[in-house]
Amino acid sequence: NRDMLGERPDFAVAEYSAQPGDFFEPHSRSRLYGAWSTGGKPERQLFPGFAPMVLSAVAMWPPFNVIRLAYSAGLVVAVDGSFGFNGVHFRWLRDWIPPFRGLRVPARFAILVSMTLAILASIGAATVFRRWSSWSVPLFVGILTIVAIEPMPRLQLEPVWAQPPDIYGTLSRTSPAVLGEFPVRTN
Figure 1 (cartoon, helix red, strand yellow):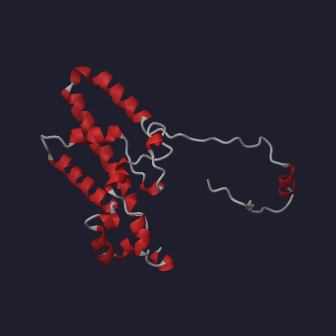
Figure 2 (cartoon, helix red, strand yellow):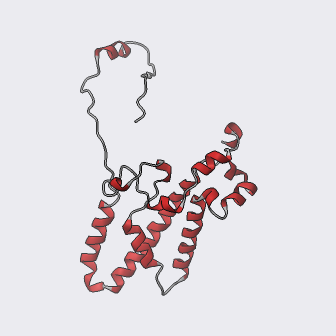
Figure 3 (cartoon, rainbow, N blue to C red):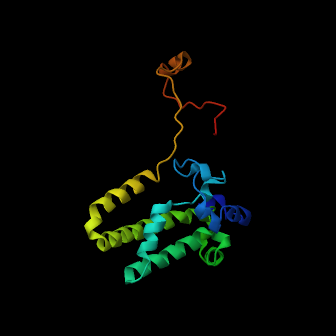
């Protein structure tokens, strides 16, 4: 990609480098938390939800083992990567590892943050189930319900026509063609 597009300019990378507050900025389409959104750049609306954060915090509570420490360290590295120019290591990676010069949106390292939180949250849930084993069924149902409801999006569905307008009839009788309609709606 870098050969075709060149290196990403610093101003673009800086604009899409996350800041700590971005991890508390929910996506505007979140059913539960969308009202809290300030409407910033979607690439920087990184709030993962309360359930993954709480369950991950349980996983990072002592006693520690190698797996918990490894995933906790991975979480720190992923968060720092998402901070881009606002973090500790991204500038060094950009200077010394050529593929990093093609990255425009360091905040997308939040994908790795989410993956790590998911793993830590599962460890945290297992810890909760072990700790309160007599309550494991209600806890399982409660956690499953929260984890299923919390990430639900708020979708805006728009009606479409049941049959295409007559103007499209002529296209069906011609050779295969690609159709582009202008102006294109972007919202």
